[in-house]
Length: 321
Image (cartoon, rainbow, N blue to C red; front, side):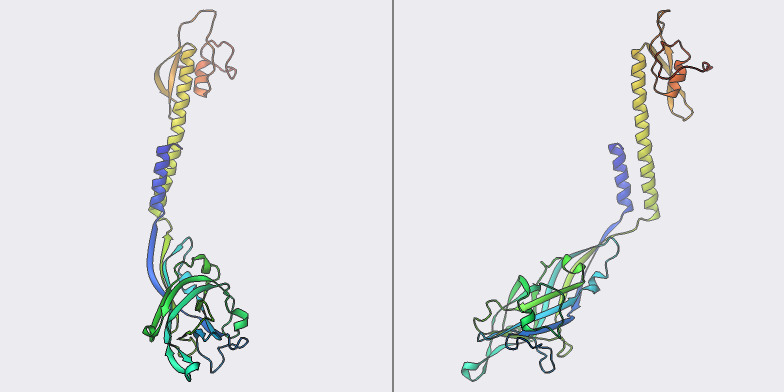
């Protein structure tokens, strides 16, 4: 198919395949969360009476890490066949109840706590908030995705961490994302915070806020299909016609070289124009060579004396003008 025919085909294809993008924002509520406590390394913190979600380190001997799981199917279920999900932004949000620690060196006086809290992607999405312990899961995460300084000014509000770098591939397969909240350099001092636990009150739970686009490839409309079909037919027709004219030019050049000249045109059965040929006067003893590649020219050739080198034998009567 020639270049201009391919352009027509591509234009028709672009008209038939409509590409659109839909942007939106969705909040995905936490499915499960739990605090891992180094002071109780083999105890699950979701037991009755321990519905807290602490993150931090108190005097270097009470380290806590938070685990959070999110079911992403409410987002992935929006995808249709052939659709592509593009995440423009994602934030992890957790509600801070208080930021303080109990100063054991000063009769357990409550002291405001300020320090960095980091979020990281868990190494695995297979875990249960009612069974995990410090010994089974603490530190089972990747590098920090972002870090936020959390302190008394953040009490009574949501703290947000940017986790946009989490790839779509992380949750397209299993429709699940798991995160850790922790402090860097655990064991070095007092930096302790209490975030809202999903089982505690049923309000102010952690959530993911995802800004996304869905790139859709719609099914071609009937008009687009008709245009596409016409473009394919036109391209094939143009290509075949161009090749036919090219063969005609080769034949003509060969015949002129062999001593024939052309005048006028006649139409073949297929409707294409075939040139009439007439032999130039030659010596009575010598006939020009005859190598016509097409049936119409072969029949015309057989009306004239042949030098015996026709591609096929002339075993039929000459055609009547």
